Image 1 (tube, rainbow, N blue to C red):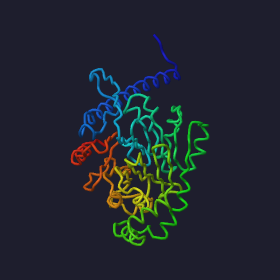
Image 2 (cartoon, rainbow, N blue to C red):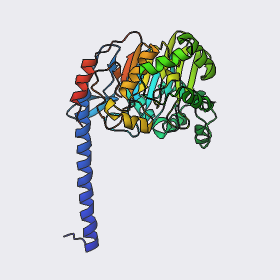
Image 3 (tube, helix red, strand yellow):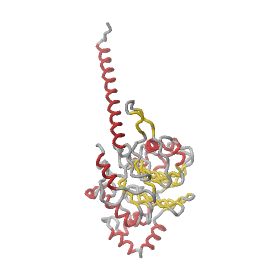
Image 4 (cartoon, rainbow, N blue to C red):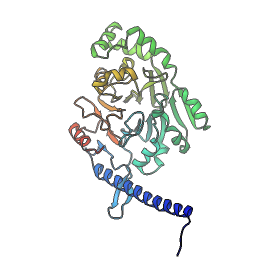
Amino acid sequence: MRTCSKTKESDCGKGKRKKKENGLVKNILINHKNKIIKKLQGLCINSGDEIIFKNGFKIKSVKSKKYVQVKNELINNSLTFLGTGCALPSKYRNVSSVLYNIEDTLILFDVGEDTFSQLNRIYGHLDILKKIKFIFISHSHADHCLGIINLLKVIKHNVVVIAPNALIDFLSIYNYKNVEFYDTTPTKEVEPKFNEFFNTSQKCCKSNLDNIVKELGGLENVYETIMRDYVFKIEVGDFIFNVCGVEHNLDSCSVSLVYKNKIKISYSGDTRPSFIFAIMSKDSDALIHESTFNGNNLDKAIKTKHSTVQEANIIYEFSKSKTLFLTHFSQRYPKGFITIYRGIPCMDFYRYVLNESTFDKNKINNFLKTLDF
């Protein structure tokens, strides 16, 4: 009969416990995955406007618990939200990243950690990375830039990176030679002067914005002045990136992308409501604006230099953009906002085809209510 010494007996006991614990953890993970997939499977608002909520997998056999990856093809002129939360990843929301596809050219607006995996979860293959030509990083906070390392490790072709100079040292550690870098930091030198002169730190409301327009001699004069004196223009082929400094941290910027003078996508990054950004975003096809807080937390928004959903709506209305996308929700709102305001409260893997998709607010609000937290 085999016996264990005290030491061996202890080791045997630990081994059994470890095996039992591993089995328990495995079962918990499988059950958790089944629960999420069952909850998220099959949600589709319509053929263009959808949430790709299979999370990269679909059930092949319920009994054997086998999964196969879903291959979602790229749709032209579409936005796909890879991360819609702020600070840290949570159960349903990764940190900031938005993918825009136009005529087989992919542009990333911010690349929070795990952006690489989010892309793989949706498309199930890495060929998509070959189409990434531009990466815009709004500022140097980790939840907006940390994912760039994994991407550039795999990307072999030349890619344009538009980012603050803090990223230069960050990227030089890895000796990337396929990066064409544009520094956005100079835009921060002029933005404070404008804000101080027009006292834009006061409460954001339409009347304040209207007063600034009046002081500058009308909307057309304002647009011309802003674009000439306060916006940094980067032109690469058919793409123009207009960048302005905004109030958040030392190197925070917003961007307005213009393609062939036909399509305009504006992305706020992290910011307090910005008059310069509102003017720069004039007549955008899509305005993507951070909505970290709801209106009850305006004091927190001011303190942390973020925006509320109501303030995002003010900027949207003032810019006369076509569609407002709300993102970058505080993780204190894991479901986002069951909102009565204008704008689409985006979730991770939400995809919208510009000028084609429709949006059913009630459907997505009802869906958000069902999420298990």
